Length: 266
Figure 1 (spheres, one colour):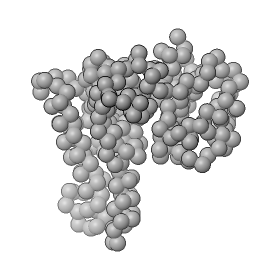
Figure 2: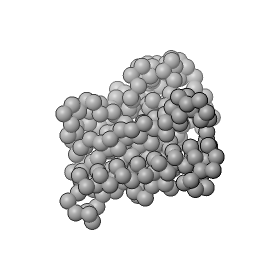
Figure 3: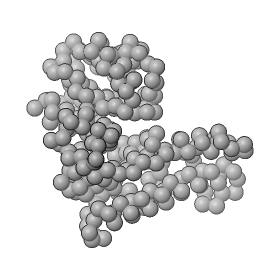
Figure 4: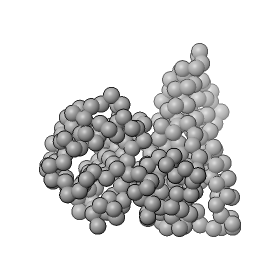
């Protein structure tokens, strides 16, 4: 059994794989102030509720975009979950996975570990030109060739950031819940207009970016290019976009499993 950890700015998503099958998955808020022991308390409780024996953990792989929380997690794993590890904790870094994906950037170290993990997962499953859209704190577009070359992408503010900016920087716009589908593009109340603007607006923005990316990545309009969506807001936004082919909420965990199997459990 091995433990996979994806530390994001808003949430930390973790999973336990046994015999390459996901046997447990959790999503908790990322708190920069969490200590190693506090993380251990949370996960010991979660493991206990799921009937999981932590001493059966034989490996750990971790990807992070939050350095302070990454340090706490490493300390937590070494102190509380390392009794029977067969190898060191594997920290995803571009130099350690360059045999799995070729990063075509001026400075490869700039790209977030989660973006490379998602790209490796998507390419491993589809082996064609790909755009991976991760709907997190930021919305990231990652472009991968059919040869598993990471070309770069685009980054824009996530939905929660935009909603918070609207409510906090204006006098009369309220905090709203966008889980409710707008009745039409033309809103009849302030809340309806905000909900419509966010959901239809982001959907149109995604379609526009994908159209531009497709024109840069392909030579023919009919050339295969799949668009994969993941992240906490993917299922919310997908109905408002015509460009998304596949929604895969577990894409990052799948990528961590693939990397673990290729780099650690060989």
